[in-house]
Image 1: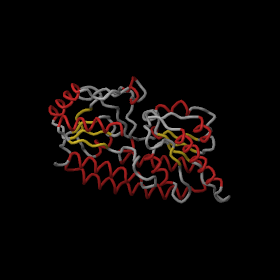
Image 2: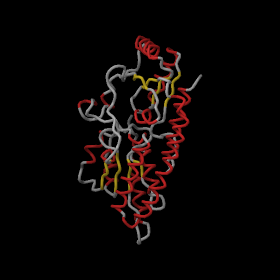
Image 3: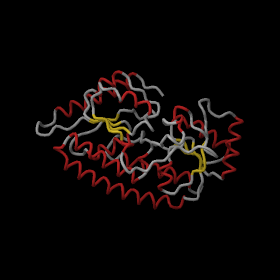
Image 4: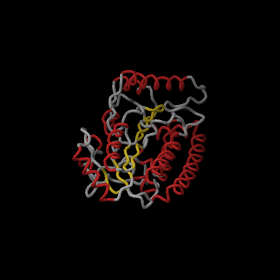
Length: 316
């Protein structure tokens, strides 16, 4: 999906606004200017920065991190930034080259390098169809050497990311080190509570098999003992009538009770599958794109993901 010129300008203006906000802070302790690539991670950064400053999201909610392309306005705006947080090439492969540009000048924190993270490879073979090329992570065409970049969907990973975020902010802005430390500790406590809540609500669904249009929920599935049994490769041209029959046969063979998509482009495909196979479908808002930007977006997005799984996997 392409951004309009207005959205490119919005990105630049938002970051410039953050820069001006930071420069207008008290001389005693100016807040750092921070940009984060995707909304769920921006929410975590915003919570750690609470009381100090407000980070800005780089990738608009209607765009995919896998295919986002930076433009000159973005480069110009990023020159005013102190810190950039991104997951890394496993999710945002198109940003690897731009972020290597020394002209940006900001400290760039690749969160996927955080020590101790649970890392999964994308699933291939058997009932797992090969994903389209533009959704494959680097390394042997998205094979075992590549990584699944949706790390924040696991609660323990999220807590490790919070520690890395707080450490990077402290290095850039030691004057607020205690605020970052206290905010991070409180954020980890909230994630523990959320994790217990989701564990309890999703427990009845562990034996309800489902299929995915994109293999994006592996960390969430593993954390909450959900049973994905394969994927459906739609391709750029959608599913033909014969392919829809094959998909319906696959759904029946695997006893799948739900088919899950996670982009707006999936809506027509999900409806076609539902009509042909008489199975429940759902599109899950993976990045919180439909949720108002705020420090609690991560929690709202995770609860919404859990509610979508419950609605689709639960009894009819």
